[in-house]
Length: 240
Image 1 (cartoon, helix red, strand yellow):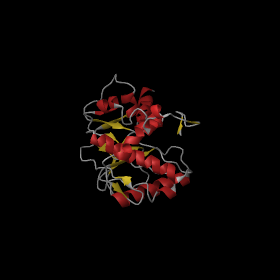
Image 2 (cartoon, helix red, strand yellow; image 1 turned 180 degrees about the vertical axis):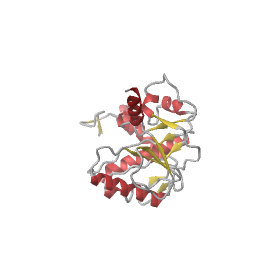
Image 3 (cartoon, helix red, strand yellow; image 1 turned 90 degrees about the horizontal axis):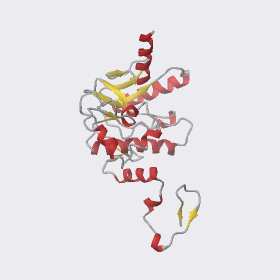
Image 4 (tube, helix red, strand yellow; image 1 turned 120 degrees about the vertical axis):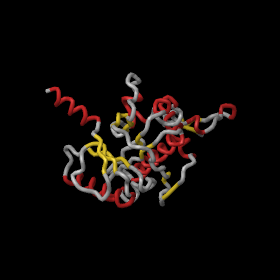
């Protein structure tokens, strides 16, 4: 018994038509499957893949992944890195194993942030674990393809903090996104608690903040990069 392409109804398959299980999976699931058999090291009680540290030089600026993958009109400038915090899950289907075009575009880039898969606050922990697995496994996959990967950290609610940073390297540059406009006090407190735990457990060297400056001090060096939205806003103010 197998399922149809949309996983909604089962159907029987005769012997002559029987194929491997991956062939019956939707395409985006088939592309995730190879990540499960990667050659990475598993760490922590939840066995997340260990991301290798970033050992290169940080770039002068970052460009959103979307502008590079969806448009090849403007190639990367020398010393320009690739940010993944501005992109959503619809883009990552283009970046899973099997899309060699994306790897070709990223070749020669001095620094590419690991894919950012957003964790939820009021969701089941299994969903957040899947997002963390995809982040760690994709970072390893790109690293094995010769792309210099900058590890990225993300988290959900307070309950995700005990495991949200498993698999991230210690004493390595680690990037986070910070866009605090319109946040409530409780969200700001959660953000601060997460950053402080990240710093205490992984000791980033430095902590790379993509977006607004932190409204509090942390016990490590911090390197700031304006987000794509911030740069657009500054251009708009300059035109007035």
